[in-house]
Length: 238
View 1 (cartoon, rainbow, N blue to C red):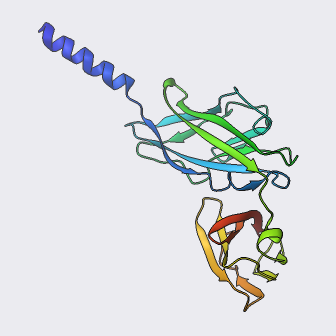
View 2: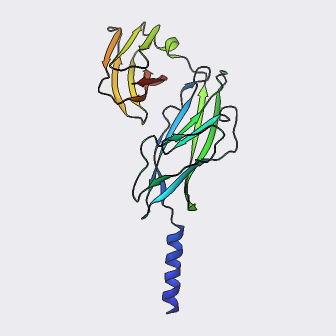
View 3: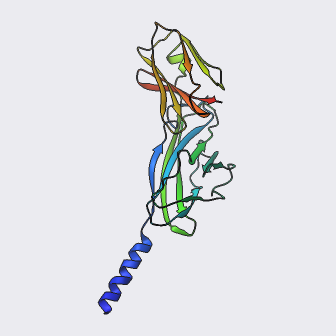
């Protein structure tokens, strides 16, 4: 009888310490290859999953330690809401049902470089935890970086323009004087899905993209030169 009771207590103890939350997806595509003199925002996304058997009120927070000249200005968004830079813990929770993963872009981390042209690297750790049981948590560290990379116009094209921005039905891409051996234009959603990709050549000098069927929101247009990202800029579709 004592053996059975001891086994039962051990089983309950293990269940209580089990971690229900995990990180499912990390998208830091826009945290790297950033120009220290031009980039005004670095963005990263994390998806969180509830692997437990009951709903969890999940809070998000950042660890306010070890900031440097790059990471000292930053902010978090969670559950579809964003807060001022001085807010370290999300004022509201996001309820995840059993087996549910947070919606794409539910959590985004933002860092605002000084634009001083100085190369910087810095890390921030983010923690997601059960509001009613803070011991049930998961953490992830994101490394941010800006450097003295060449701009798009300097490295890939003599002239390059994407307009209008914001755009609604048609997006124009006009360029000339390609200096690299190969270049690609990509249109990427906020959750990292490539919705358009086209190789650019010296034969053409202008593209007209039908964007009328794309959902409204924020996208990024990305230029790859010889397989490397040379720039990523924000594009609004309304």
